[in-house]
Length: 354
Image (cartoon, rainbow, N blue to C red; front, side, top):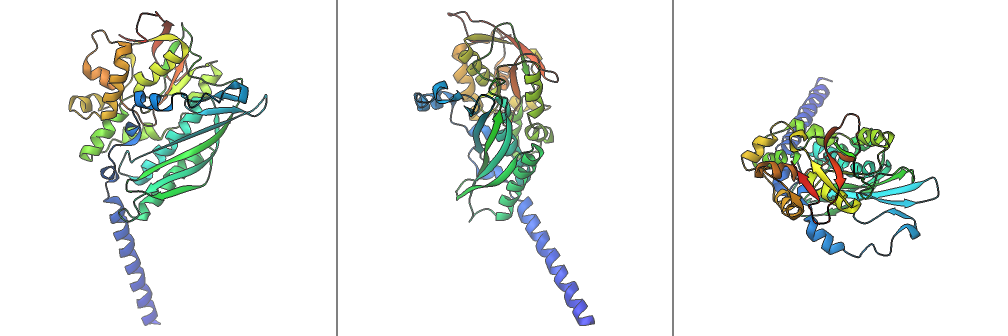
């Protein structure tokens, strides 16, 4: 009996040592070091993307039941007079080193597109690219667990998905939701005279860039990226808003430019009113600016009157966000009013930053 007990205790000790080794192996990996970019900053630049997809959505429109299509945050298709289905997909390379947090961020980011058009997510499937000979599968499991937990918080079922052996890790979700076709949030429905509301602070991109370069952790950025945009979307609809978009890889200015251009209006941004995460200004000062952010600024600059706004401020306004907030045409409780929409001068800029 004593021999059996000793063997049991010995086996338990071995199991505990193995568990510690596995845990150490997982937590010591810096996932961001396996990606050329991070999060939504690795998107194809907006100008290149628009040229690439030009004309591809010409066969889809209201006649075929497509209420919102190419160029918006998600596709919305009418089912009948009372219901519409929402469909979107989003995935990206690691934005943080912690696999569970990366999974949570990627899921919140994918779900955000459904909220951005006024929908409610119902079901999601995983999209996973994994270097199986390079990174432990325990890490992949943690990524999936993070995504599952955030989807569960949103009341969204996760059912399987698709995975490939990929030299660079990537994760995200394809999400299906529903919406009321008479209560949608669109990018082309902004009107002059409305205030602009932003539901989350900026600065996520520069803090993530600093994290990738130095390993420093920024829990304030993780908290913002993992927060769902469900409440902001609900309050926007309750306030009667009709136009919105979420702020992700093209930065505040890039997404605002798309909305203003699609709606035929101009937008005035009060730079002093824009909220930022703690540490964001210092990150820009120290040079932690992604290539995606610089490309965003180059894209909007020809259409923007920056006045005397400094280069560092311009970079923050164009900062490539991951799982950012909702930008709404209208005043939304709990969000920050950062500017207003005005009539567009045909010969003037689309964006005005003061």
